[in-house]
Length: 324
Ligand SMILES: NC(=O)c1ccc[n+]([C@@H]2O[C@H](COP(=O)([O-])OP(=O)(O)OC[C@H]3O[C@@H](n4cnc5c(N)ncnc54)[C@H](OP(=O)(O)O)[C@@H]3O)[C@@H](O)[C@H]2O)c1
Image (cartoon, rainbow, N blue to C red; front, side, top):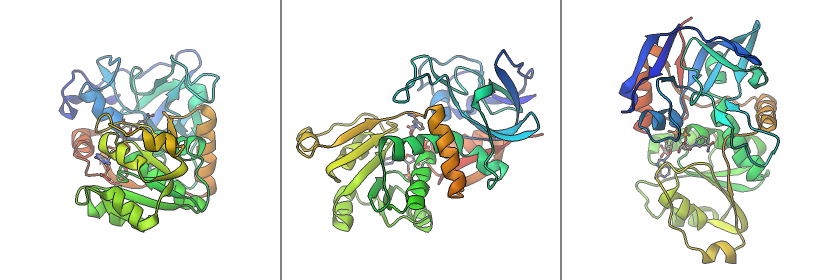
C-alpha cells in the first residue's frame, strides 16, 4: 500500500510516500480502508522532533474516515483511555505515534475505536472530525461546562480544534469572542457565527479589546499557551473557567492573585474518553455540524499540506485524499 512515512526528524520534508506492506490486524483489531485523513498539529510537531517517545520509521496521522466491514466509519484516535472518565490511563496512546497511523491506504485499529460515520458528513468532512472534534467537545462541554447564553473566548480560532469549539458554541446558543493573527480568518469565523473577532497580531492588547467589547467571558479555551493563555486569564469573569489543551507558543507566565481572588477554575484536558467520543458524534449529528475544512490535498502532496499548517495559514482542518 501507499503511505506517508517519517524516517527521520527534520520537518515535513522528511515525510516520504512509500510502498509499504499492508498492516495485519492483531487480536482485537480491524484493518480499516482509509478514504480520507486529516492533519493535526501533532503531526507537524512529530516531524520536528517536538513530541515524546518518537519511534521511527512511522506512518503518521491520527484522523481518518474510511470503510470497515462494509460500513462507512470514522476512527476514535485515543487508544486505551482506561476506566477513569476524568483522566486517561498512563498507557493511553494516540493513533499515528507510536502505532502506525492514517496517512496510508490501510490502518489497523482496535475494534472498539471504530464508529459509524455521521450520515450528514462527506468522506472528507468525516476525516476532519475525530481528534479535533473530541478535543474541542471535552474542552467546551465536559471540562468547560459551556451553556447556552454564556460567552466563550476562543483564542487562535483558525486552529483545527478551535474551529470546532466555535461551531459547538454557536450550535448551543453561546456567544463567541474569537482571536486570530489574520483578518481573513476572523472573517471566516464571523461567517460561522463569531460575535466578536479581534486580531491579536495587530492588537497586542487584545484582552483589553475583549473587555471593551463584552465585559468579561464565562469561559476561555486556549491552546496557544504563553502570552495568549496569560491574557485569556484576565478576561474571565469571577467564578469563570479556563480550559487549556495545548501550548503551541510555549509556557505562560501568569499572575496568581486574580486567579484565586476571582475564584477561577483552570482545567487541563487532552483528547477524550470513549464516552466523550460517542457523545461528540451524537452532538455533531444532532446539530448537523460540518467541520470547517481549509483545503483538501492528495496524499502525495503531504509536504505542502504540512507546510501550510506549519505556516499557520489554514482556517480549520487540512484534509488528505487517500488514493483507492
Ligand atoms: N492535548 C490534546 O489532546 C491536544 C489535542 C489537539 C491539539 N492539541 C494542541 O493544541 C494546539 C493546536 O492544535 P491544532 O491541531 O488545532 O493546530 P493548528 O490547526 O495548527 O492550529 C494552531 C493555531 O494556533 C493559533 N496560534 C498560534 N500562535 C498563537 C498565538 N500567539 N496566540 C493565539 N493563537 C495562536 C493559530 O491560530 P490563528 O491562525 O487563528 O492565529 C493557529 O492556527 C497544538 O499545540 C496541539 O499540539 C492538543
